[in-house]
Length: 409
Ligand SMILES: Cc1ncc(COP(=O)(O)O)c(C=O)c1O
Image (cartoon, rainbow, N blue to C red; front, side, top):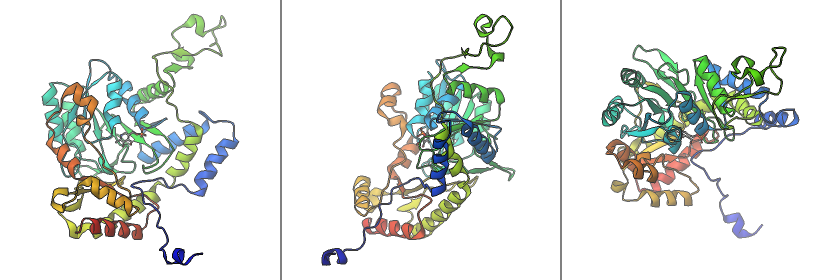
């Protein structure tokens, strides 16, 4: 080894803003499926669905290819097609709007709280007022927090809106009701169905994967059919008696019937084996994430208000998906882009969640840009710092040291 190499401090691993935590037993669970008979839909799909439904205390969980497909399936199951209008908070990932839009619905963007990024009841009221009438709202539990769900549900119900919770950030989050009772996100106490994503930066990873949880068995059956081309093999559902059945009255073994055209949005046994193995670790992963959030909160407390964590919702026990802060970039004298580049040079990743969707090119050209000052203000200060379950408190310290050094706080 050269003298130079001896003097150089050991390279520290790059800390991305989020990543999966895969352990040996996760790998073994996947290998077991690979050695078996089913690579597409087999018994592991149903096992994962049962485990997920139990975890979030829903009656049914329908797993599918990813969170975007889950949002699409939810919109489709609620009949949100041509001639319907769906309200979506602007501070979210593209898919929350694009899924109902691709079903044929028109989108109206709602504003959000500038400090938490969550849609408030008055934001929903304002969006309904702007459009006159709407058919559904897709509420978003940004960063893993949920807002005033009872008030949002009350406004939605009074205006005839269905409610889909985009809970892609919020597996394990609980809502604290006004009467003090807690309900899990996904249990659907204040919505019609909930959508989850198991993308690798989420609380648990499936590679790609998503799910809808729902309590109505008929909607669950429709979701299952729609994720599989919209076809049925259930003889009791066949409308075409002539081709579906033989002279003896028995269903023909080859026959399947198209009820409504759909895509192939199934998740397979390989993905579900990983999902099942990861789901068993959810409590441990979430406890770690909570501890990391506390460590960040404590170390960053002296730098408020120029840099502070997103506002905490009192009606929520969050399962943090991101560690999101709000930075007053003009007052610290650095642009966000320069800050992110300087952080990257220190081996620290960061990301912005999100550029408001109402400002995205396609929607801006289609609908014009609504005045949503809360979304704009939240976005202007938003930054997500490294946050994943295999980080430790030393990593948090390293990030905070780099942040405060670069911002000269
Ligand atoms: C809020 C939100 N909705 C929907 C999605 C889409 O999920 P997926 O990436 O699994 O398609 C994501 C994923 O990043 C998300 O963060």
